[in-house]
Image 1: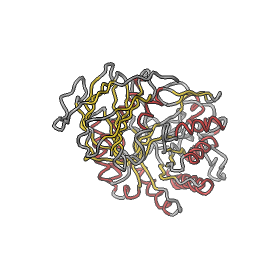
Image 2: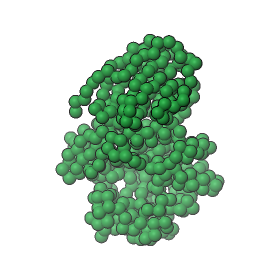
Image 3: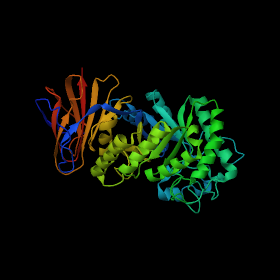
Length: 478
């Protein structure tokens, strides 16, 4: 797609503004932004997404198209994603095929399991599509990080006989007599992928939004409710088995749907006394959450002394490009206040919308196209690289990080309003000199378009941020 390239509304402000602090907000935004490298936070581990459900479909496409998509997602000069969550499908009752899940979320939601009954052998030919994408990513990005996670146990381990949930969605669906077999099931998949494909899952997550009340029998996708007490029992059972497996994988939990539920479950873990010691990482989703809850989560993570991921999210409001930018605001809020090391999307390809994905496609015809959200996400994932450290900006719509060498500063400026707004970005706290500033922008008329470089004479930049836009500055210093 051709885009218009024109000079950005950027003027270098001559003179040192060391005394300038954040002024009173103007139209909801701080006029002066002080980037402070002395206030350093989390180091970015990466960006990425779940592989279910999209990968289970796209992995069966023509190999040339598969390679194109994997290249787009993983290449450092494109989306630069390096973290992917592989779904260990439970598998629903075969008699439910083309039934309730297809009516709810489409054929893509019918994830294949590996074991058809308690006595059946493992079927390692299952889940070919998702596995194909997983291996293509490993080939393209040898540094890729993988997590294995479960949405539900196999249907035959459940009370309802359905991998979508219990008849009462507020009750556990996994029968206690199958706890141990469920743990073994997850471990056997991880061990197989290590021995057959040399896939080292960094983490294994046995739960997904398990404290939620919407996993019901005959529902639209795999899901399984677990009360916090049940989660604790499974972690206590799974942990020693994992330690004895010979894998380097560690446990992660609890991937609740929102911050309120994450806090409830993690406080239960903390009260149990021994659970955090058994976990190598904490995960949450941010489908909803306030800034106050983000702060509380950050404080809890600091107490736990565990690595932390925002492992799944999606849009919460708006339509089209507006929704894309509001999701970018959620990313800013999560990274600035909650401070996870990784931030992941739920889906990368959808068929019927342009807000839950970066690619819109047709799983049957194998046709796909980029949507605006791809360029919004690229503004962050391409430039805020793995190993960069997040630093303070003092501004809700400004996100910044510094490279390990200290020679590259990345600043993203977001404007979700219908009017242009003006920013003064103060870099006087940096001891280095500025060599030049490159910049890219996504707006209604631009798709991560490279704009003319800026020659900095002083350490303060004035920038007019166009309405509905996301701009990324890469500041080269020496």
